[in-house]
Every structure is written in C-alpha cells, then in structure tokens.
Image 1 (cartoon, rainbow, N blue to C red):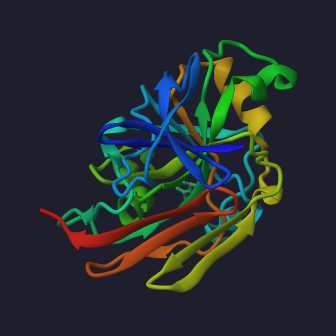
Image 2 (image 1 turned 60 degrees about the horizontal axis):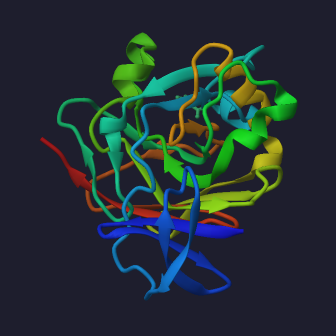
Length: 248
Ligand SMILES: NC(=O)N[C@@H](O)C(=O)O
C-alpha cells in the first residue's frame, strides 16, 4: 500500500512513513526516486477525462431522499472543470439556493477498461481517493437534472492522494461539518460494489487511465454555508478538507 500525492513539482510517493519523488508515470512504469520531505501543498491527484458518479448507492441515502433503490447503477457525469484541490474553497454560486455536501469514496482508474468483466474489473484500478460530490439540491429537486446541479465550478473537491493496494470492501467513511460528524458509514453498505460499477460503466463507456468513478454518498447530507469547513475522511486514505465561501 502506498499514497501517491500530486504536487506542484510532480508526484510524491509515501509508504512506511517515508516520502520519495515518483520517477516515471503513476499510470505506467514508476519507481521511487530521491527521498523528499512530506509535501506541504497537494493538488487533486488526477485531472481525469471524466468523473463518473453513482446515485443512490447507499440504502440509507436513498431512504432520506425518499427514492426507491435503483435496479441497476444510476450513473451521471460530473465535469473535470468542477474539481478543486484539497484545501481550496468550495464556492456557493449566487441564486441557486441550497447547496449540499456529499462524502464519497472515489476509484481512480489505472488501466484502460472497455467491456471488462466483474472478475477482471479491479485489475483496472490504480487506487482510491476521497471526493465531495457537492450538489445544488434545490436545482436538482426542481427538475431532476443532475448535470447542472452537480456541475458548477468547485463542486468536486478531490484528494488528498491516491492510495494503492487498498480494498474498498469495508472502509469507514465520515463527513464532518465544522468538526461535527454528519455522515458516518462504511463501503460495506454499497449497494453496487466497485467491481460491479466498473464492469457496468465499461460496457457503456471506456474508462481511461486517471478517470474517476465516485461510488455514491451515505445518509446525512446537508447544506453548506459561507464560513463553513467540510472534511471528508476515508479510513486508510486520509482527509479532504475544504472551506466554503460565497461565490459570484
Ligand atoms: N441525491 C443525489 O444526488 N445523490 C447522489 O449524488 C448520491 O447518491 O451520491
């Protein structure tokens, strides 16, 4: 297991508490280079060609939304332009009403995946990271259109790193608003597990190295306000912390 950080000066790999420059390409051949200090500035770990999100993939969230459980994965896309780095502000656009946080475990694709089987799906995964699927809830409720409600700039905080060699079967996920726990669950509760999601999506669209599959949010969603801070924490990966500001 290793944590791969993207920094302004390149990738850094951390394992057993030691940090090394990553020589090569995290999606291809790479090796540990010179020893370096722990990065002080980390960027979103990838710039994906697409973010594929899953809706209603936790029973308790579907229940709090008053929605029936989907018979198959409910997928939608989020634009890469929505990505913000760990520590950067989530901007609440003017005039859109309520904007919610949604803590999620996100999968980083490592190898090109086209029509892959469930049995072979996980071999296409590079690792896991955290994502906040920020959502303009009033807009979503108004007309059910996901892309607009979830596609605003800064609505996809991503990070802090890619954790390799970690199973997504039973990871604790927590969402804290201003230090208070608002979401607490485990990936054990996912209706459709990661292998099923990758096989399902890859039958529709090819997943490319660096693409993100965000696995859905558990119950406990709620609104964000200027001055707040929201932290997504996933066991074995780390914390994704973002302040909230009023946007234009
Ligand atoms: N309601 C809603 O948008 N939910 C999804 O994003 C989800 O289940 O993660």
